[in-house]
Image (cartoon, rainbow, N blue to C red):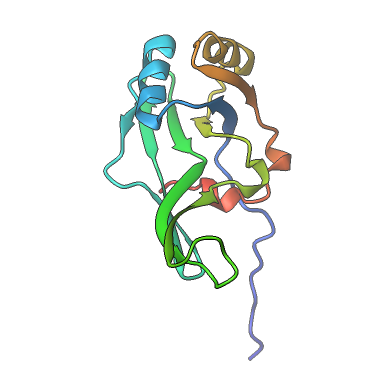
Amino acid sequence: MPAHKLVLDEVFEQPYKLFAIHSSVEEYKLAYLLNKHLNLKLARTPKDIDLHKGSENAFFAHFYFEDLQKYCTYHLVSNVAREEGMSGSGGDSLFFGEQLAVKKSFLLPEFKQVDYLVKIEDELDAVSEKMLTARIMEIPQVSTAYAIDLDRVKSKENLIFE
């Protein structure tokens, strides 16, 4: 009896919009400012986003809000994870012994300049990209904000927050 093989050609993705935010404030402060200016209720999730790369783990702060009236969910995620650790230096270094080193990991490595990402899962297309970008830009602590073209995102699997 011949074996039957089923091939899934299309991956069914939930529609979402992705925004980049450049800001030097801490993630909890940005969540507060977005809540204040956009009338949201972003709250930190009990678990951060854990990204495994080889033997290393990077943890990214994750804030979440589900808008039941507009049938959409908001995710605020830090794009940069900083981990402090000790690094040994070689004999040709000015300083001998171990030194404190900060290692950076990125949720979306193709957007290393971006500090924070806002992902909006919006099935009914109730959120206007232009209006949301304009409202985020009104926040004085935000340097710039813009919508990201999803075709430019290479590591889309990092944006699955379940």
